[in-house]
Image (tube, rainbow, N blue to C red; front, side, top):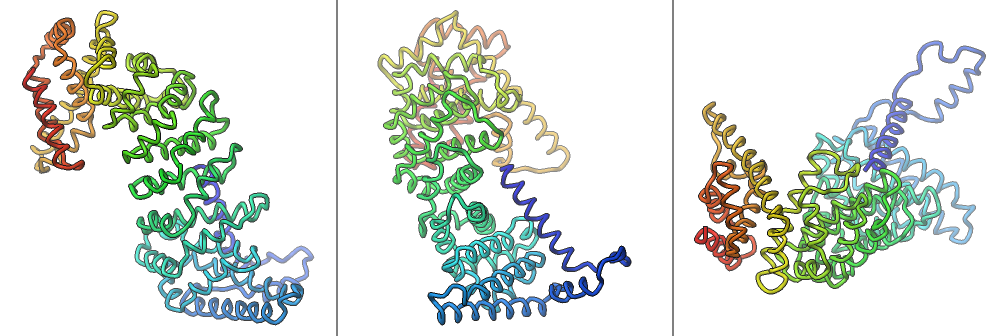
Length: 533
């Protein structure tokens, strides 16, 4: 995102400079020093600087633009095979498009721009035979929809974005994107500006994320872009846009899965299985690719595709290489194995336990990425979730025995670690509960749902998963494991009732997002732990 920010800042600087040159009178004496005053006056007049950005100025700009557009259309129709005859009108049209960029300084005028019916004329130029004109329009749209420009201008932004969409901006932008060259510097910049405009539109109207995938070939273009081995700024931005499109849309996750997207994203991250990204921008791109992979792994059918494409094996290879993608690989495995037993079985079959448990014990390779306390804790939470998924997905047979044996080996050290984590997260949740009680004493009332959500944020969910793992260990009826759990609880002045209380709260708050049958099944499993304890 640094690239995006740098480019945004650059365009803002450019626009700021343009605004100043348009609006500010030169200070007295600026033309001293032997400079020809008449020449400067002529230049000033020829620029016909706009002094105030208001409704009158807007109409003037729009009329001038429409006139140049009409002249260009007429010249092209009259002399279709004589480019020299319409070249001048194209230069004039280019200048008028550049002048319209000044409107980004007055977003409150956007409703009037829409009322003047200028949007269809502007968007029509995205299909202009001269790519340079289409590139100019892409730059204009990026400026008009820039996040900083639209900030605190919600209503005008909404009016402009609605008008753009009604006039097929998504289809026209993507059609133009497909014809842009990756060798011409101006067209490379236009690729970036196209993606930036789409991101800006999504920011104002989130439903655009699904709309653009339904109506255009953008997703296929983005997949093609991340397939390329060489890294560049637009490949990075393509990975970011893909992650945005997948983030909150099951429809897009499924759509990309059907396009062989799981396989393509796996191939893209496989380039980094044994080497680190070379620059911070490349590092950010790899993180975006893993974000895409994790989003893709939400629908069940994509988990299946992931297992078939040997994604589990690839993630384990990445972990064993101990490069910067280590924690991202654990995150992807956590998504793949959640509520999907085949991924859990494959994980055990390809020696995943041998890779995951050293990490669970805290033997995490130190890299720039997981040096921070927060990153290390997130990794811990992912590993706890992954182990809970293994217990939930592997219920019997030799795989289950291999999983349970991990908690007996080396004097039950994994149970010691589990109880260490239990205490840490338990203390955090207690501290948050006490804080909330204090807030209530100070007359800041909270309903039960808000209280529960705050506890979840402070670590309750991870604590619940630890209690679930303890439930699995206890119901295995292994005497050494039971004895160890009881001993460790006693050392901490706790009893099995403390674990039961956490499980009971978890049981009572299981939602029905996956349907009433799944809720009943999940509650029945927790009830078995409660009865056994």
